[in-house]
Image (cartoon, rainbow, N blue to C red):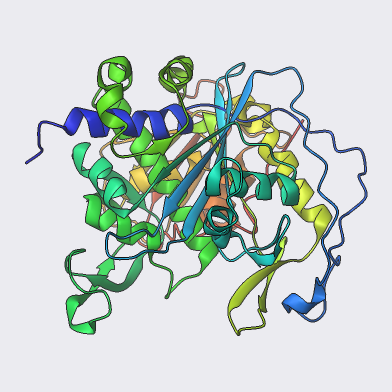
Length: 450
């Protein structure tokens, strides 16, 4: 049962995520060979003592002529019983109102950065450090400046939500459908009101591959759990949830009601976004499809594991230029991807008895800029292997390679049958061997660029 304040939660979500998630990617970034800051290209001994001095600020990434807005989304681990907290979810959404696209960039919570006017530390400590320093604008402003100083990304707006607010947003939407492509298992607290330090308050849970309707409790666990995976995989799940929230907000028709529900929704999210700003995102939110949203990460090619002086696990910059490359791709709208421009017609059919697998595969392909339809009744449900039928016969500009890599399909299970009268360009029939867990935040499927 939802309370009468449900619309407020929903709108809040639309502002925080629909308005943010729902809009665009920044523009192309032209980095003119800036001098790298005082960070080793590939530090051989990963400890904080490698960086005893303040580095040079990273040059600010230019935005060009597009109408672009960067929104910093923060998820804090604040509880009512705790006085201190950290921002364990840090995602930058770059909304391009000119081309109506959005890019998301996750910053791992353990990323080792320079906190201006202070010291080296994990990025998730910046908010609280800014509060303690009485930084102008508070901890949020200090975190935003830290991101600009270390990565050259300027922030226009900030929105933060704590555990309770996040759960409320999800529950008010009636839950969200999440197409889980990598099974997750681990210990989940029975109720968030229980003592988290008592191991008897936990159950072992498993979330298999498939489409799952998650309420606030489950979504929070799914976004936070990392002990059987890693921080990069958790970043991907967080972005996956943002996509699911955006879809649900559109489905329940919340976005057009932002003006009506604005005041009440501000109860649950702390943001400097004004109603007039939020309304400017609405056309983008309503116009976008799945492949107008693009995900980016700092992964193993950019960061490597290290240890701080107190023995804590940290992620140290591995290569400054690899980080710049991620930022450059982050600023390039998804619509500049050649595959997105070509928009091949792709059909996914579930040839197994596992419900929802065709949707899981379709959403997996959307991460690569490939739009696929699903839901067709298969001729049988006992296919042993996943098959791809290529009816284009093309080599140049073909999406076949991306399809094979994303869905883990070898050449032996690909059939090329050129058909000038084809209804679809590619037909995928999922078999029992289908393994959708192929995405690596550090090494995403390569895209053919212009």
